Length: 82
Image 1 (cartoon, rainbow, N blue to C red):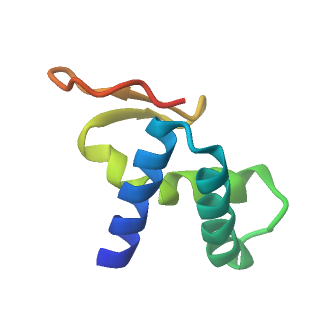
Image 2: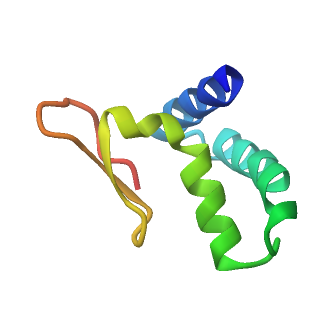
């Protein structure tokens, strides 16, 4: 579990830094781990992958899953993550 949280924190930082290649690689790796239990090429599989991948963002952001948009919680000085 600690490894998953660490990877999630790294993914969040890559996203904020705009490192598209690192984000794509991490999402792809997590999708391959999660999707075999789901239908791989489905919207649900991708949505589950994104929510699992960005698990650590829950502390500082409000998650809007239908839009895949993360907004900083009140009092946080973090950037929006879309």
